[in-house]
Image (cartoon, rainbow, N blue to C red):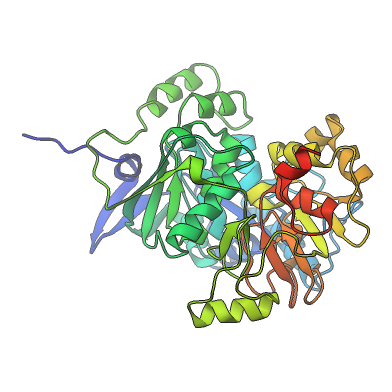
Length: 465
């Protein structure tokens, strides 16, 4: 009898499948449920109102990140009029449910997709859900992690299961080496520009190849983070020694004999050589250059040295009008009004280190408002221990508390109408960072270089000066 190899996704799915419901749908065991104050309080309150308890409170976690203020000295009060109510409701509901809460003032607080890896909550082989579309980030550690809605969160909390339509499987193989100046963020934008924002629709993407294996965990988190912009169900990278070294000693990771046993299991979490995928994509990492978006979709991206392409659709025309650009315009040199470094995409310590290396000894252009928001309180503390905050402050950046901040407008704070912003975030939709704001996605290095130049700039050029 011939056996067929399995992908890492299939191995995790099979291990967690409680029941085959037919029609490609399965009832899946959920190991971890993550919540944040924008949607988590709603799920917990609804659950309590229905007279149901959290089935496994030690496996559920909540944080304050989405609508909290990030200004120094912050309290429960927020710029968003209803923000305080979200915060207090989540705090009360989390305590009543007996789940772990990373509250304001807690040294572990931060953006949910940043704190979960750094606390060792996400682990290889686990299933993990959160009412947030960028939960796919956490597949970087070999977990099956995906975003859900508040109603699904309520079901997962009550039963530790979810009804899931099984996705198709896609492998994206990235071989070769990233060129000088090219980052995981640039790799993600390169993929989107080449294959489109619907390129992985209905699939779970496994990132593979020597260029992916060469990335550290934080680089893999950035790459997997933008799988939702690729329309993927989620993304995953097979865990290896890089992941094991990263997780060892984390607060919620196994310890002692349990750690040794876990690593033995985790080493089996790789796609078999004869595993079959529904779709395969391949790129050469050497083709990736520093990227920047020109439109209102992450797929509307070009190399920094490139030009805005001619519009081929009504959406392209609308994007050009909104962004105040025209076909043939050069992205390099476009004047900017603001620069933002942060988010679950690029708000980790390594991101801040690379941006600080560009900023050291330089200053932001006089007309540019520049803001840096660490992804977690732990990241902020580590950055301050290294003196990175002084580099940002001396360069003219605002240095903030941890949170999602101006990655999106829901927190109440925003950039101005028609202001052009270079940002290390993941979405450049219309009004994403404020009503009428024009957002250009790029790496933290490009954001830092652009803030100094006062226009979209190439960090590799600035490095050489």
